[in-house]
Image (cartoon, rainbow, N blue to C red; front, side):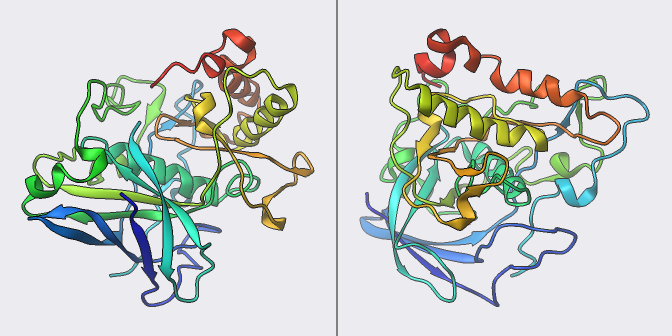
Length: 324
């Protein structure tokens, strides 16, 4: 399948978001042609940008005096307008007033992994708000989009490539699914964002959805088990870029580290004074910790978590390339 992406800007770009100092430059709708077959006819979907699935905030040092995460730092970005997936290179057939490349990456969720893709989209939103992250350590994201209620779903479930086979291990289980309860001292959802989100108890069998992320196109994955010292230093640097904002990737395997294809001044990392050759992808298993001025010492703890396995060298999960 070779889907083609056609994006149309509706009611202007989302360049300024309420309560948010930065965010994704995105659009509200996109159309993907020939993503499957509906009653023997090529199926084209018009996708709407939707809210992502935010994570509970995490800390090893929560106390009764720990402040809430600021509302604007945790909420999903709202467009304010009317293993998880299979990845395709899509040709942009048309775009209006938007700096899309000629090709982009379209990541389509498997039948059972919509919540995971919505969670990954939330992490890209978080990265877009911070320095030295989007287009520096992680790819640029153009948004999370959904088509609901494909009818009849069985007519396309066997023709959309990611939906053809549901395999063992495809269950849509996120980090906090069994841990977000009152007695847990490491996870909090004070605003009820996660619990009240549509994705919290989403059931694909009850409300069929086709979900995609649109991302910057990247190159090949790190060639494990190659021990390239220079490349490994570069990968360590992009992992380092995430720690000051409290993001621990939790799944930094070789095939989640991709080589960049295009770089520009927006790709310059002010922390390391260079343009990195790699981008980190697949954030659905990540954890975000809340860092405040009152607990800056926990940064060393987060660095330890980020590199706990990576530092094992050839014996690491990263180098062995154990499949997810």
